[in-house]
Length: 241
Image 1 (spheres, rainbow, N blue to C red):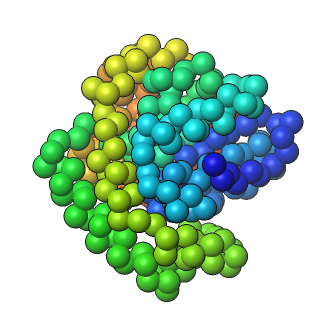
Image 2: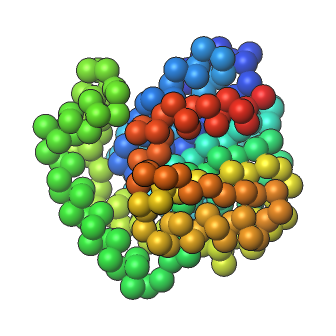
């Protein structure tokens, strides 16, 4: 599994799980590497792993195996698809983490909402095959030129099967009943402009687990890590140890 590593290995580790398509979802959090060891796995099917087809079960096991080799508990931060994987990871491998920040998870899915999301994401994939658009998105997320070039190249390789599997990934509240027993602090975030299912997901997380609290960020949409980076980075610094 390809990973991005930033900072010094002897520092406390933060593992960041990016959203679908965009490995550099946390580009505006890379500055935290002056205090922490940051690890960003390339999620199966994306980035340097785009030659593979996404599978939630295999992907989760690979990430868990990689974290277990660190021989320390880590802070887990996930966004969008990465948030769903983070939810699965902390539910099934809670021994690997001391805390988690889960941003914009989609966990209360229905057949109708999955079908709708598939259409949207399939259309988005076609758009992201356009190199100029990838460059614009990378620029808006604060990426330097070389990282934008990487993003453009990676997106040409992402498969339609990966998009289908990442949307219809099987990660739900029902699939992870162990979440109620996760024994460490969890913060679940959503933007007030996000779809209702995402907002309801973070609220339900807090209802299910007494160690979890939720926040709905005003004016935010599905864009908290890049657009609200100052507040988001401050939150990470407050949780990380």
